[in-house]
Image 1 (cartoon, rainbow, N blue to C red):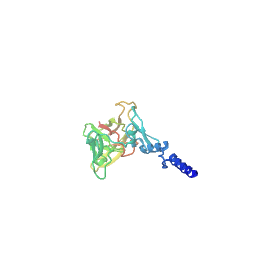
Image 2 (image 1 turned 30 degrees about the vertical axis):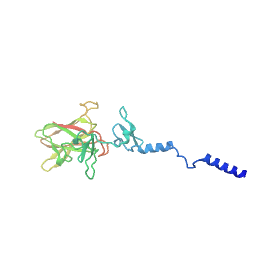
Image 3 (image 1 turned 90 degrees about the vertical axis):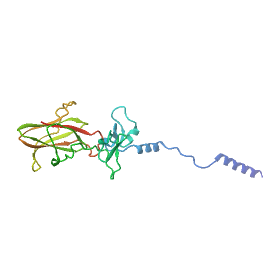
Image 4 (image 1 turned 120 degrees about the vertical axis):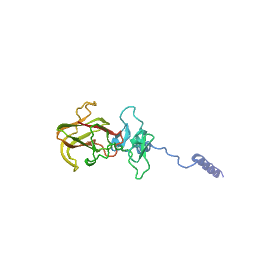
Length: 247
């Protein structure tokens, strides 16, 4: 009888001591937290895959550039093209909240692209704009590799000079001047070319591309090529541009 009571007492003590035998929740390890944080970082190949004031380091977008640096959360989001009006956005995109966003068309447009300038379509010598004697203002290189063609004419023997100036947002250009048969729209010989600034100082005077050639009366074709080494169609930064004059 005493043995039975002792057994019951021992069993009761075991139940009280053990309580609920369900497993307690395990705390998240530091490695798991780090993995989740890394998964939220924006992957990148180059800086254009990251937002403004961010840079691509070891395959992820991180704060970088000018102080004050943005928070990491800023760099985790995809880049966007800033805008003030719809004119700052490419066809099919609207300016909403100062950002170019799709207007709902299918297929959706790439709203990172800059809009073409007022001289487009001047992407070939057969659709070139005409130089009418006054500087052409507001040319843009709305994507890497953009080409602008301009036709100019003279009725005298002269030293013809072509100048791209007022360079905007780090545009890099090459100027080519060709002989041109206007009646047949046939491109002739390359007469002169340059891809070098007139001088190296960071002044408006130096930030100019200029080339010159002796010509006879006739029509001449000028080709302006954007030679920036960036992926075509992915540059969301402010649109590079220049003004052009011939004399």
